[in-house]
Amino acid sequence: MEIMIPCIIVGVITLTICFVIIFSITGKHKNFINNASQIQNGMTMNEVVDLMGEAPTTRENNNNQTILVWEKSQWKGIQNGGTLTRSVKVVFENNKVVSVTTKNLDKSTFW
Image (tube, rainbow, N blue to C red; front, top):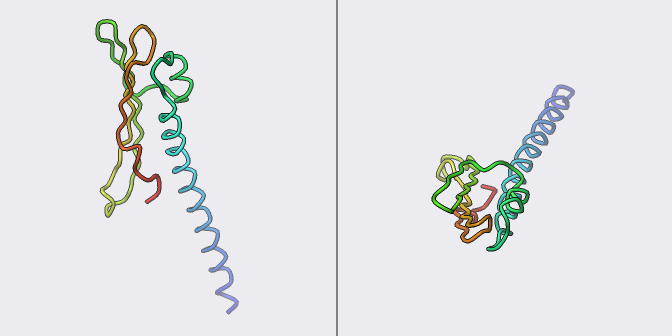
């Protein structure tokens, strides 16, 4: 019985650390989803970049359009299809949002 108590304590601590890590990762994805859903036509490029809180994954310039894409990947496990990539593609004309396209923002951030 005396040997079991340290094992139980180590197990509880390990599980707690795992849950903290999982919840912090899912929180980042929830922030990405929430921020992306707030992007609206007419917003400036600076407003969108400030809202997303990080540099875009890709940037492309076509004629008078600028296209910014943010992507965030999350490992969902083998049984849940592997890696899920969420993305937001924002098209700007004259420094204003004219189009927003999203992918996989409706998927759960948890398993």
